[in-house]
Length: 114
Image (cartoon, rainbow, N blue to C red; front, side, top):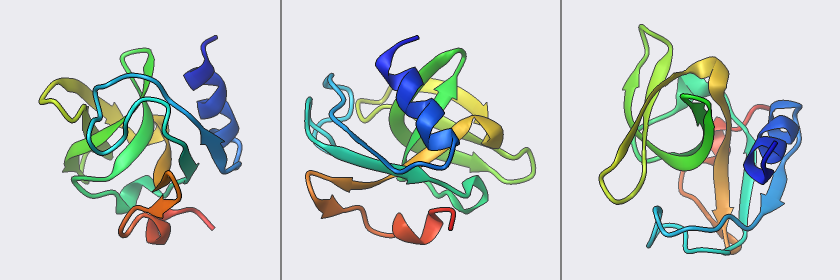
């Protein structure tokens, strides 16, 4: 199990988690090793542009919601460079990014499970 899988498990269990993801696929929204805070989310409230922690085809990503399908209870996940990871069900969306390096993500707090 990788680090993102462990974080996903904690968030799925109801915890709000701070961590420092690595990689460049979300630049400039998230730069490698910036501190992010991810909280459990109500997937039915997600919108295009939200950053979520989700499992797509067996891999956990901290990526963008690029499309929503309310009738199918699913969202499409993409990075910030145009690559589409695929569709995933609401049951595989673990959390929403609420802060990046201490800066709140607009609208994210209203989507946190409470």
